[in-house]
Every structure is written in structure tokens, then in C-alpha cells.
Length: 275
Picture 1 (tube, rainbow, N blue to C red):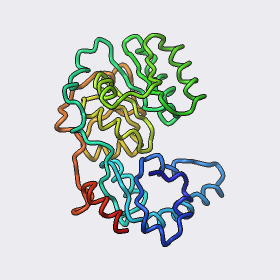
Picture 2 (picture 1 turned 120 degrees about the vertical axis):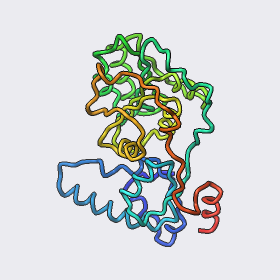
Picture 3 (picture 1 turned 180 degrees about the horizontal axis):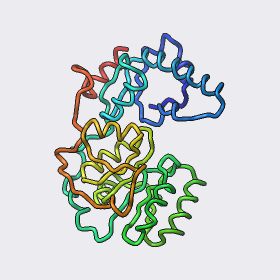
């Protein structure tokens, strides 16, 4: 399910690589975003990535969630990458009775990230929201992550937002999480890499206005799919926090097949039996 480093595919014997089906989840493919000031380290990293690209193209297949992963994997591994639809969830599993829960909010409800890791950019996001802190309620899912970083986020939120900051430390069941997301007006996912795709899929179903990094892969995919989003890099709280209830039917990520034949889990499992 996850590749922990650029070198991991190289550790798999060549004769076994053709038996590997890799279900990517975004973070495990984001190592080229790591920048070093040491030119020799960068050259070494580029070599390792090129080697990884060749070895991953020897895999039986790559499981992807939607158009975001499709764009990401093609960009990283080229046309030879064998991509198969292997989604986390479908929007048919989402409780449609919660649609519209966010329309009548007196204050704007804002979700920041989905975990307790720096990639969610909690502090940077809260700094942007301080000018309108009296007009909003912020919600921070911190059920897992870096414990020291979580303490820093909680301290900053309490200091600057006081009773308007709400922390989620315990995991919610799926329906309860859907209900929570349905009450949000805005959700911030500003990381450049592919992540939080299940969260984003639910948010789209409930017309939550998404704030994304325009330099990232998610925003790139949204632009291609004509799904509206707000640019985190140029975010202005005084002008951008105007909630827009858009037509869900026009903005759901289209359920596209990633191959003419391999477009459901049964066929993926059949593939795994035969490799």
C-alpha cells in the first residue's frame, strides 16, 4: 500500500516486481518535492528517482483513486505506467440527506487539514485567517500525526482563536465524519502533493468550498476537471470567504475508466491472481 522511499522498489528482486500491485496514496510518491542545498545530494536523488521510475514501470499495476492520482502518476512515471481504478470510496456511500447543512451557518465553518502533520500547514492557514477570526469557527482534525507538532498547533489555535477553535482528537465513524464535513463552508488542503483524497471527495459532495495550493497536483487536476477552488497562495480572507453553493452534479469528479477493460475492483483482483 505504501512505498516508504525512492529505494524501496530497488530492494524488490527484479523477478518479483512484475507481481507487485502498488496502491499509491499520494504521500508515498512525493519525494521529488524534497529540496536540498547540496547539489550532489540533488543529483543523487534525481538518479534514484529515474531508477525508481524504471522499476515501478515493471510492476503489474498501480492502483489510483481518481483523476488526481491519474495525473500525478502519469507525470511521475510516464505513459508506460499501468494505472487501474482502485478507489477508496464512492460518493454513493455518502449520506445525501446532509446536503445543505452548511447553507444557514451564521459564522463560516472552516476545516483545516485532515491530520496532525506539518503538510496540512495548519499554522500558515491560521495566520491567513486571523483578520476574520471573529467571523469564523475553525475545525482541526488531529486524530493522528506528530505529537509535538500537534501540541504546537493546539497552542497556536487556542492563543489566537480561543473558543472559535475546535479540535478533533478521536476518530469518528464514517457517517459522523460525513455529517461534520457537511457543516463546513470551507476546507483548506494547501499541500502541493496528492493527499486527503477521501476527505476531498466527501467535501465536494457537500459543496464545501475548497482552498488548494495552485502550484500543487490537486489544483492542477481540479483545473482540468473544471472543479472550482480558491487559491491558497493568493487567499484574501476579506474577499474569498464568500460561500458559494455550487451545482454538485457539475463538480463531482467524473467516474472515468483508466483503461478500457480494467475499471472495477473485481478485474483488479483477477489481475492479482494471475501475476
